[in-house]
Image (tube, rainbow, N blue to C red; front, side, top):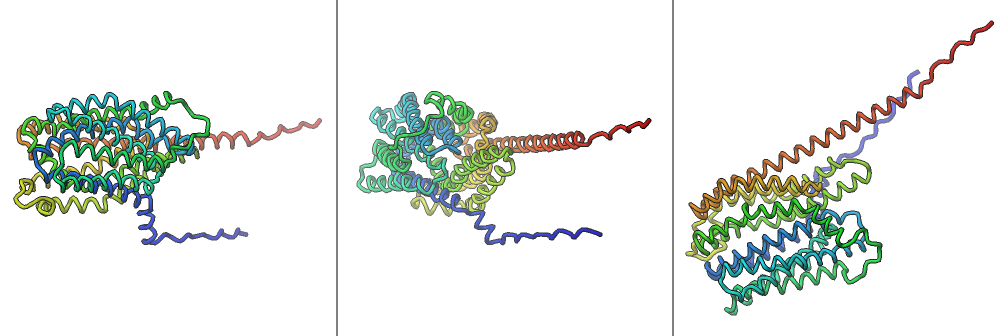
Length: 470
């Protein structure tokens, strides 16, 4: 008599509408909204200043790139480790770590102040700009510290209030000063300092940093600093390499062709940087969610390879749906945004060819940034550093000679090759990590199978020996 077959249980498959809702969950929406505020504020600030005077803006933008470079060093030592280590800790311990991170920021500002002073004096030949540039640097980094602390807990919605002040209110203040006819480099950096400091206070209040920590500290401040350096050392080295890959281009233009060439270079990037809202929203979200998925999987005794890849791909697709049509529009119709943004008769209207080429480079750069964010979320920050090395090598060999010889059009063509090298390197490291994960999974499965076989063999007792009768 045969046993009755077990009923087959079928589960309803999610429809297309539910899949779209899952693809665009609220974490991605709030992250995108927050980054949109940053990108819009930066766009308006630079657009307003760029329309004032090309030579004036060229000097301002050169100093700004020095500040951004120093901010990236701060990111490596302070904010990136916060993004990775904030998963799975209590609110009290989180507040303690943030306060220590603020102390690290203040300490790091000491040597950075000398660097920004040197860059400011070399660019403007005036000491009057130095204190305002230092104030902008310090306030910017303090605000970025508390902002990243909110984002590390996936609280992008709460970060919007402070970011609104730091970026959109800043742009409004600059418009007001320009309207009154009092704008200068000192005013520009002073407004950045004031609005960033106000935003930092708002976000520090949201984090409740005024509440003392009640838990026993997991480690001392020195141990936390060492842990931050260990986590961010490859990011730090990668940002030092950025001297050759990103910041050397406007600095070389400033040296070879003067501030007007820097202004033209910035005018093209200003249009392309409208994509930053999506690019950085995706990258800022991928790193903490991948770190969270990895931590949860390890708590269950699993590698979490599939989970981390799934969440990274999910948010990467969210960005690409809107981002690639934007780049395609710039490639097909580069003159449209230039005529919309700049005045009739502006010298920037002739920059259609660099716009097309830079749009292709930015599209490849988005894919590279997604790969790097995924690797950083896994704690594999050494891999993005090696990819950045590939970028730097190609930049030195191809890009910088093209910039020195052909100016802005040389910078455009030269941007393609290093970005492609970095993208291919990042893809290789992700491929290697997946192969290693599959190999570990296979070995674990074989180990379990061998253990089950051994247990089965040991459970089978030998037959008793026959009893011989007399």
